[in-house]
Amino acid sequence: MKSAIVLFAAGAMILGACANQTPEQKHEVGCMTGTLTGAVIGGLAGSLIGGGVGRTLATSAGAGLGTAVGANLACAK
Image (cartoon, rainbow, N blue to C red; front, side, top):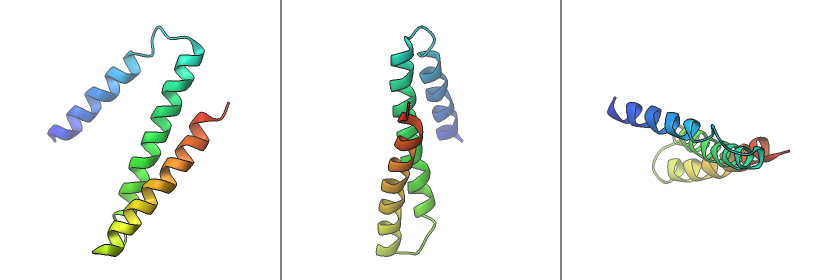
């Protein structure tokens, strides 16, 4: 529960920091956020597959694929 509160607060601070930015800065923040979100979601999805070394490989592959997809979606202009 504490980690959820910390993550929520961190997200609120990141979004609050976007208030007075130029469009280019907002794009950079959005790109970074999308890339990191993709990595986390991909890693979590990969961690649900297999066990032992297979789970580790699936987690790594999921994080890598999530990073690529998140960057592709968030960083396209």
